[in-house]
Image (cartoon, rainbow, N blue to C red; front, side, top):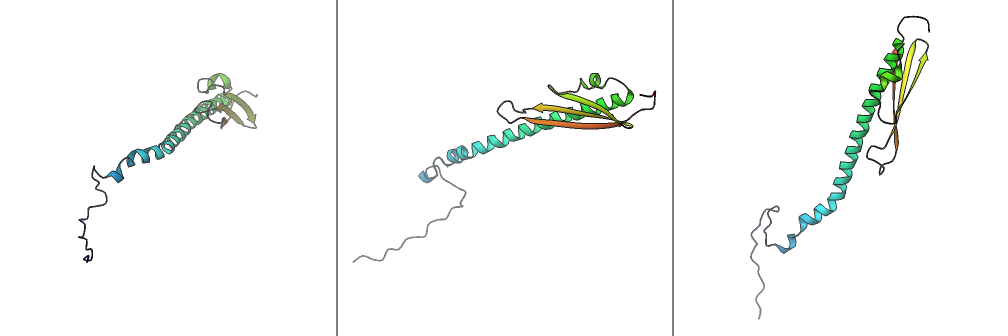
Length: 134
């Protein structure tokens, strides 16, 4: 009759070593890359969107600060802020008691027409400088 089947213990290999001739491991890198690539692209696009939005916010803050200081000195706030204004932005200047307030509003689509529109707003306040009565 048949003798009981005894197998020899297999030589164990570390789990991270794979041989080139192992048919079970063929194409695993391609499949994992194909599955992860959309997520990588989405994260990259989100990062670019955030950097673009923050850059626009910095420009709006600079424009608001310049406009508020110019208004506090009695200068033309719109002319001073134009150097810092992003495209399509507007400046509103007002005086509240002894303060000059400038508000910059900039509509934008950071990555073009594929992203939703957003509005960036920056406000700056400066004390009015002493001088002639306004």
